Structure formats: C-alpha cells, structure tokens
Length: 346
Image 1 (tube, helix red, strand yellow):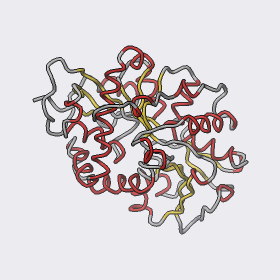
Image 2 (cartoon, helix red, strand yellow; image 1 turned 120 degrees about the vertical axis):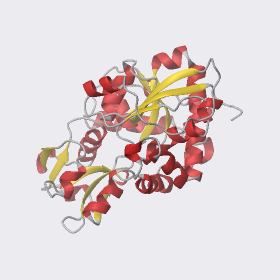
Image 3 (tube, helix red, strand yellow; image 1 turned 90 degrees about the vertical axis):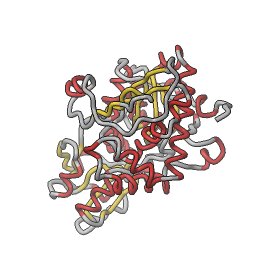
C-alpha cells in the first residue's frame, strides 16, 4: 500500500511553511498501491483547505494518481496564491493550486510557471458586505466604504482590477490592511466590505454574519478564470509525460467530485483530524462551484479544465490596462492547454 500524503495544515508564514515541510502531518486512508518506480510529487495549495481542493484528495483516495504511476508525498497548505506561485517556481513543490490572474502577475515578474488547466471557468471573486448595512448593486456602491484588503495575493489583484475597470479611484474608499482570515473583520464590523470567494468565504460569512450583499466581479469587468492548476516551465519541458499523467488523474478527481460532492467533501474532511468537522462546509463550497464555475460552454466542448487563448488574452489585457502588471506576458507564457486537450485513453 502507498502511504497517504503528509498533509501540513495552516502554515502562517513562508518560514513556518518551510519548517513544516519536514514534519509528518495527518492524512486520509492510503489509496491503492502505485508501481515501485512511480513518480513521487509534492503539491502546494494556495491556502488552507476548502472545497475546491477536494479533487486532489479524491484523486489520491480513489487511486487515480496510483493508476497513473504517481505517489503524492505531500500536500502543503499555503498563505496566498502569490506565495504558492513563488514556492513552486523556486522548486519547492512540483504542482500547485493558484488563482490564475495572480499567475499572470507572477509571470510578469519572471516567475517560471504555467497553468495547465482551469478548475474555475469563471472567477468566483466578489466584494461582500452585510446586507443589513450596505447594498452593493454596482462598484460605485463601494465608494465611501471601509474595505479590508491585503497588499498581495489574489484578492488584492482582483480588488485593484475591479476598481480600475469601473473607473473608481482607490482614494474613494478607506483601505484598511487586514490579515487572514480577513472575513472576521467584516463579521466584527471593523470594515464594511471585503473581497471574498463565493466558493470559500461566503458560506462561512453567511453563517456568522447573516445575509450578504454580493457584488460579483465577473459581472463588472473581471471576466477571467478563477483557480487552476499550474507547474513550472522546467517540469513541462523536462517531464511532460508526468504532467500529462498528473492532469489525467486530477481531471478524473474533478469529475468524481462533481458527481459525488458529499463524498468528496468527506474525503477532504477526513484528510486531517483538524478538518474532521468541516465536511458540511466543504460540501456547501463545492456546490457553489458545481453550480457556477466548474463547467462552461468551453468545458462542454473540450472537457473539464479546458482553457482558451481568448480568455487568457482578455485577462492579460485587463491586468495590463488597469496597471496591475507593468509588462505583458504572452498567452503562451502563462498557459499550456495541451495536457487537457491531449487525446488519451482516460
């Protein structure tokens, strides 16, 4: 039997993350055995576990990685997409989970990473406020509000691009620097609004803050992919077969998750004792993605995880045009869609 991946939970800094990498974590029950000559890999998450991460754990538990000759040694939590992109880009991980617009930012800063599939076909990012205090019908409604922001990561990329795309000067809001979990600042009324993932923070906020007013970025100019899977240029160039086999296993895990969300949520919750009570939350998060982001007209035509040049070019143009990036990477620099579209027997 192959051992379950070590799952390292809730690192709070890059130093802590590096230290924790050497420590054994919990783990779900081992999946089926992989061949003795299997490839061993490490996967770096973008943050603490949420429903979106379930396909990785499902692919392990159901033996999809083992079927492809892969052993997942570690699944490591992160502190942000930006940090995860840098870690994998530096070789501290073989594959990673990241917000894809943030990958464009990293690539513009010469981090050698490429997306290999888009899990979220549209961005689940939004601005959230308590409905009994503020109504967000358009970005103009953000003016005059206190907003909690981090100065890096996917939510900040989204926040800057959303304001710029809608002609709003950041000075029209009062920006307060917050630290994760930044939704707690909204719950305690320290801020009026925060960027939020509708497939992550929203179920948490609805439980603790009541009804929310939600302003979807995708409806106001933030027309991008959401979270996806990436690896390094070096991995793609030197071991494309491993990238293909990883993609095959992941996409099987994603399809299984869509078909069996309650079971997938439990698989994720069972991966570490600290997550044992989170299955209902993970199922809510997954359902938000199943209903809104995992599939699209493109996935109907080309399969789960598919990506197209036009969407990537729009993302690059948006980020460059709004000053989020100062140099424009080419579409071929930020993505390699061939592993999703490859003709395989899977």
